[in-house]
Each structure stands twice: as C-alpha cells, then as structure tokens.
Amino acid sequence: MAGGFAQEIAQTSVAKAVGTVQTISGNNLTIAGDTGAATSVTIQDSTRMVRTEPGAKDLKSATPITLQDLQSGDRVLVRGKMSDDGKSLVASWVIVIKAGDVAAKQRQEREDWQKRGTGGLVTAVDAAAGAITISNSTMAGSKATIVRVSKDTVVRRYAPDSVNFDDAKPGTIDQIKVGDQLRARGTRSADGSELAAEEIVSGTFRNIAGTVISADAANNSLSVQDLATKKPVTLKIKADSQLRSLPPMVAQRIAARLKGGASGNSGTGAASQAAPGKSGEGPSGNGGSARPAGDFQQMLNRMPTVSLADLQKGTAVMIVATEGTASSQPTAVTLLTGVDPILTAAPDSSRAAMLLSPWNLGGMDAAAGNQ
Image 1 (cartoon, rainbow, N blue to C red):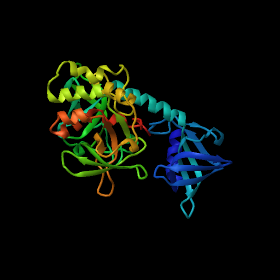
Image 2: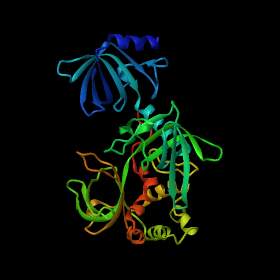
Image 3: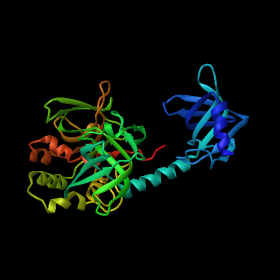
Image 4: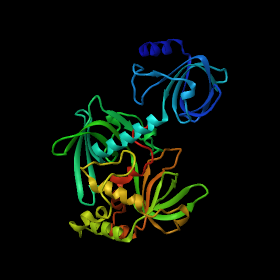
C-alpha cells in the first residue's frame, strides 16, 4: 500500500513544498521552507496524509494520519497543485515527520557521534585508496588516525560561510585537502588506529591569532590584526559563535606546552580540569580515542562568556573561523580571550591558533543528523 502511495505521488503531483509547520488554522497550514520562503497549504478532504520516520528511504512503513495529528514544528513534504503566484499549494499528499521523532533522531545521532566518532586535522588524502589521515592534537600530544572511506560512506562538506551541520552539503573525498578539519563516525579497528567511516563531514577553517582592532556590536562584527599575516581581518559574530575567556592557569599550561617545557604534566593540564563524560554538541565527540579534546570542549563550555563589548582594542584573541567567500566575511566559530601567555610563548602565532583546531567544531549548536 505504502509503495503505491509513493508511485501515485510521483505520478499525480505537479508541485511540492518541503519545510517545517509554523501555524495551523482550520484546514490551512503555513510552512517555513528550508530556503526561508513561506508557503500556505490547503488540506482537502481528499488529501492523503501519512507519517514516516526520519531517514526513511520509502513509505513502506508509513502510517495514515489526520490533520488533527499535525503540530507546529513537524516536518512535512507536501505535493499538490501550486497557485500561479507560487505562494500557496492545494495538497493532494502530505508526508509528515513528527517534531518529536526528529528530536529523538538527533539525540541518538549526537550520542553516536560521541561514542563512535573521531576528528582532527587532515594530514594526508589518498582518494584512490579511500584513505584520509587525520591528526588530533591534544594537550597530551598528537595521534594519527586513518579514516577509511567506502562507496557507502556518507560524505558531507561544510558550507564556506556556515558552521551548522544541517548546512553541510553532499561532497566527495576529492574535495578534502590537507589542513581541513574532518569529523568521522564509524567502526574502529581493534588498536584504534583506523576507522571505517559510515559518515564524514569536513571543511576548511581559518585559525587566527591576533589583537582586537575594533568591535562593532551593532553590526555583530569584529576586526582583528592577524599576527601571522600582519593584516587586519573582519569577522562576523553570530548567535552560535563561542566567545569565551581562557582561565589564566590553563593559558599558562598551554604556553608551557608550546615552549616545549612541559611534556608530562601539561599533557593533562586543560583536560584534567574538566569532568569526564560527553563532549560538546554536534559531531564533535571523539569517543575514547581522543578524550582530552572532548574534555577541553567541556571546559570551553564552562568558561566565562564574553561579549563583543568586552573586546576592547588591543585584547589578545585566538579565533577559529569559517573560510568565508568572496562576498561574505568569515564567521567566528570559537574566540578565546586571556591568551596573552600563549601568544607570548609562540613566536609562530599560527601554531598557537592551530592548537584550537581539533576542538572548534564542538562550538556548533546544530546537531549531527539534522534532517
């Protein structure tokens, strides 16, 4: 029956709308589309409505529902006849994924990324062999992992102007290059040196160490003098940008690490101050292979927040940001103040900024697995 649904949808529908239910009034819905446009949908007595699960590939397990079962926040795919102005749709079919099912799916996938995930900087790519080598630099040192990519691996690529997982687009292994950041989840080898990836997401991020030139709270922007390039950089600050103040003790231990003067104790410096457990949100969990990275992200989440108004001229900062595009400024993912000891200790300021790289994706609020 459900298979017949799918065939009939394909054969009889002339237009579609995909999005999230905003309002329900009588037999009319307002749907917020994924591109931002809103569509008004009219449900008729003849409209067929079914409920399916997140990630379902077909409608074999779909179950009939009614308009009364719909709620704000539910995800819907509507098929039917579009009005001439393209703003309203008379529905012949409505496929529904309940908001609660989406939330449960996201929660499960977050936990799976944390349990079976790893991540770091890409150090080598062998596209022909389907092998990507990543290095996860923690306070305890660096660890290399080979990520194996097969034809069944889901490959995604972060958008150059977004850090949200659900903005990531389908990608290929050929797009991944040395210096990118990559997160993967899958099955580890017995010794933990390899991971057979079920899903990977990668992107190019900028590491900036410098001093504040000016902060514009009205326009949510920040200008920084990059110590590596000796040039100013203007960044966007968004609601999900992490702006934190690094505790002096942690900054001093990281500085000692960069000087090469503390290999043992500094290896647990930042990590030892964070409670063990799950790491930050999104595909940032590193499972058991690189726990200090997850612990550092936990610690970041507990550090005092700072605002743009707190970033006075001359404030030393370390920033991980998106790459940006020719038409858009990079966006700050993670920004830390209180980093003066680190920048003093590292003549190569880019090396200091790179220390943040394995952890920066943990600043994302979007959960892995958003559908």
